[in-house]
Amino acid sequence: MSTKLYEPVYDINALRERLEHYLEAMNLDNRKVPLRMVLFNEAIEHVVRACRALRSDRGNILMVGSGGCGKGTILRLSAYVCEYQVFTINTSSVYGVSNLLEDIKTMYRKAGAGGKGIVFL
Image (cartoon, rainbow, N blue to C red; front, top):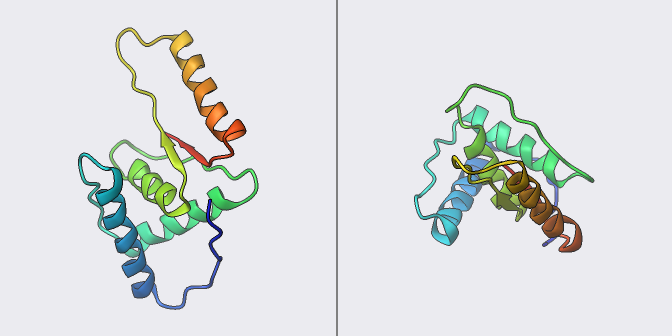
């Protein structure tokens, strides 16, 4: 994990350009379906808050809101900025408690033994 400096931002447009660069890079790196996001001021503020929370010691964040309002999009971009891996559960009609426990074990191995930052969506 690279060390990134926490710096004050005085120009929201410069921050918007930097986040647009991250969004474009993320879409080129690992997205089958490109993530589309309009970086309006409030969205930028949420990404910055999420990054700050994730990068703090034992950092975590709980996003609450109605479905389709962009929580996952904000967290995916924040995870990319922080160089964290996104871990999601692929549920199906046969997905049960044992599958959930196995997925959680896998996630803990990556985070604990692997020393990698994980965002669990």
